[in-house]
Image (cartoon, rainbow, N blue to C red; front, top):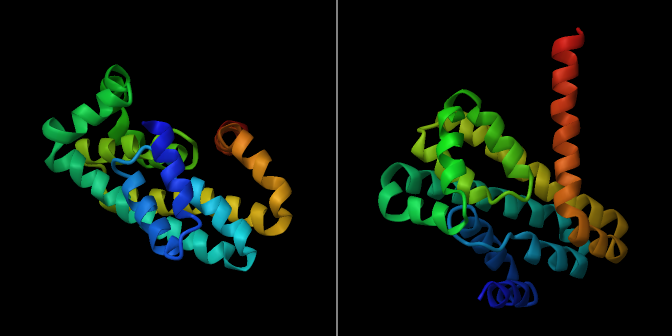
Length: 193
């Protein structure tokens, strides 16, 4: 089933209404859909590299809007929708531990996990369940999702087709490396200065 969803999403990238479809996929991926918008974003940018940054902006805006839908699921539908989704993705036990420290470091969690391949929907729902401050959620989501999509767009715009295989193969590790370096920089500044 997951492979069919992946193929369907990839097929949308070639459709004449691919841009609205990118917005739609970016929106629902942030709350319930398992396939990331990168599956559409990458081939769309490669088809017309001049639209790279416009497409990254669309993915960012709709992903953040979809994040608010995930937040609402956490607030209003935890028992009916959120808990089964969290169990479906296998994060039930981890979610309980995660929730305890979430309010204190929730903004950083949204940012870090919004950039990495970790399912963003889990973070948006967790933000709703824990009632993370909406302004913190908005700022962290915009920064994370914008960073993620604009890095992909920039690499594809600059390097074109050769970077596609590299991005698809190493997207997760590249973002994790970036986040580790970012957090390491903050830790170094805090404890060394």
